[in-house]
Length: 377
Image 1 (cartoon, rainbow, N blue to C red):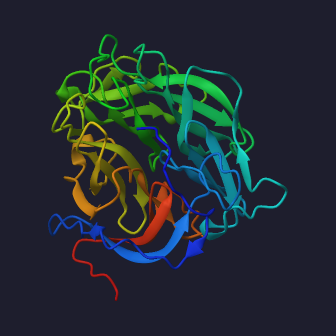
Image 2: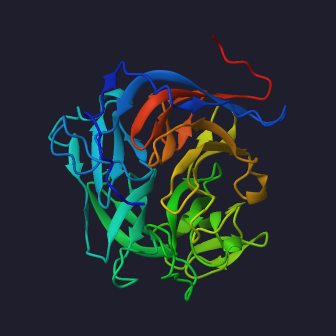
């Protein structure tokens, strides 16, 4: 899954290019009691990406791109095996931060086996930035490039320029590696996730993609950790299994929220993955966007949306509804970025209107509507 995008254009900027005619847009309107999401074409916005040699040569965006505010500055992380940070006064002017910090390579305090993609962040009230990464260790299946991702925690005192690694907090069950898999990237593991703090500031909730075990173990699953355990997270994350939050993050069982339809280790895999989550202030609900893979090479079938009022109830997520199709085969990582600077909106907080990004590019405005609400012309 971790391959460079063959062509990306300039750094975060606005162009009048519109969405390709091959893309198909839908309206997620499951029933009269469920919110909906619609897309509108918008001027193109691109992130700088990871490891970009110049603004005219942006790098790849190979996972969810978390964002946070500090004062008047918005920070966004793009990763492709390693994170890079952009900064600016708002979403449309990233790369314009003073003091030589507009675009930098973030650094870790240690070395590990495999790359680390920063997928989620949380800015604490005391200024500490917490983050969570997707790690892909090498050498698990000799003679191949197969890996089995893990999820780890980090923290930073300088808005993510430097990260202290706090260790691995989520890992697949032992003995579940599939060295015979036809899958192009993974032989097991869990990763491709997002994290959000609940409105009560009691728990961090993880929406993780699982690739290990039987088909019934695979899909998008949930885990959580008490907010108070954020500085010592190892052994403090618990997976949701059979209606309880009682399985350890390291090696525990789980029950997928959105089970894989067809096993990840078949040629014709059919599974949701890569959930990105935010709290929507207009809907007063949580929203997740999902990828759907339909073959061993992870061909993107489309972008889906689901809603839930209560993170503690994983069964409360609405059935995923398709909102975008016709993307390139590797058009992954759908996420929103909220537009209000006043409300400090990010990838974790948005209102009625936001920008939809797919693999670091936004060609759409996404509107979230309450049941029965009509979009303004």
